[in-house]
Image 1: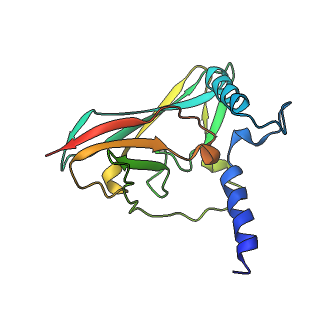
Image 2 (image 1 turned 120 degrees about the vertical axis):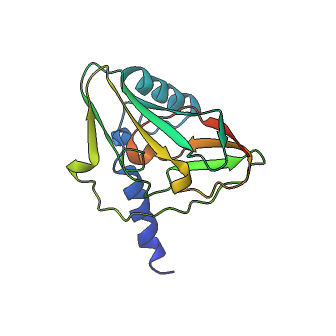
Image 3 (image 1 turned 180 degrees about the horizontal axis):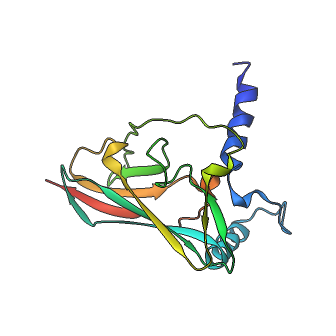
Length: 174
């Protein structure tokens, strides 16, 4: 319990250190929902953002392939941390998957320990007006077993620096 006062700040620092959103802005100290939403919209319009896509209907036993695409709308090359994205093997829980009743699917994959700050090799560069995509089979990291409708939400914006505004859904059928 004594170590908790050291572990919690270290964990928060680890989650924030890979993000491009850690620089102070002219609105530093102002934390309103409209400021956060405006900043996210501006980043999507002028910088990096990601979108997820998945088939609407997937049969039990088939792979559940999630396509994760990163776009660079900026006029210059940008970079993002590939940790906690499909651009590396499934070694962290960067997605929240819930069934139609709101019950979260258990993550069963590996959990990587990370060196902070992230080394240069953990970043991927993306040229101006370009995009890059990767796929992940959700069955390799998540315990999806029963037929139901599932919703997938990206939860690692602070680690990768990527904004994913929308969740995706699919129906898992027999």
